Image (cartoon, rainbow, N blue to C red):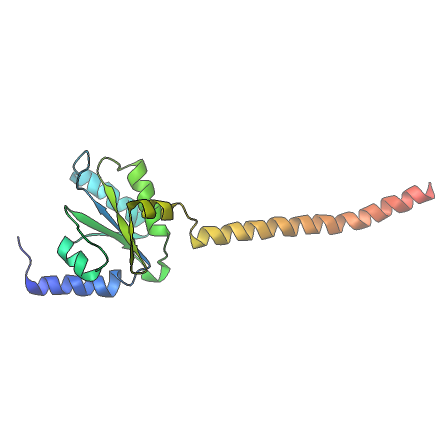
Length: 174
């Protein structure tokens, strides 16, 4: 069933207001994949994304190109995947989750087209490379862990100073 001009306008408005403002939007397709997507696989894929804070929308290619002018030459069924909470949107989480899901569980059903990151289109290879970068939360966790290790070593060193002095005094008495 064809959608009306008003419905198209509403979809483009939704994309411009909610999706185009995301820091990263991943585009995937079922075109040229080894297997078609049945309802169970579609549900499993969407649930996997939703559980990780991502939303999945299937949108007409012509409307995607209106909302994202940098995206060219789309064919087949195209899915847009983006953060459910736009305030938590970052450049890495969406590509990381999708690349992992497609590689691990859905490699026969979906193929990554690319991503739009801060308004710039990244091809498939760049999107996969981006998925290997640490997210902001992962980076902060690494920094916190490093600071914790340094603090523990400093505390141990400070504790060792009086112990060393006490040993030295004991050795001098003997």
